[in-house]
Image (cartoon, rainbow, N blue to C red):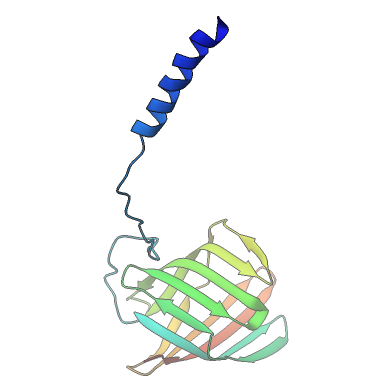
Length: 161
């Protein structure tokens, strides 16, 4: 007698499962989305810039890093910045802004990874003066006083074609 009630119940569940499925499903491909949807007013930096050198002097210690082909800063027209640099295995995703009055650029990090340790805590970069900018080259220079002492950095780029 139990089977008389169980059999219609199983048939109803099977009918519901098969009738609710979609028969013509088209797969969607995801594209790399920008983290910002507002066009930046200053587009001078937009492009893919390969790092030639990154010179850092902090607390009396100086380092000159010579970039490799995969090192880059990518500035998008939406104000996004994607950084990959072999020095400390840096990977960074940020939203940048250009201050025309001081001719400088700074960014807010939204994801950063250094030597495999990552953080999604938003942090503000130091400002970098746009020392040189033309169609083929870019130099960003930062000279700041920090709580740990003076910090100087100059990054030289070549525009990727």
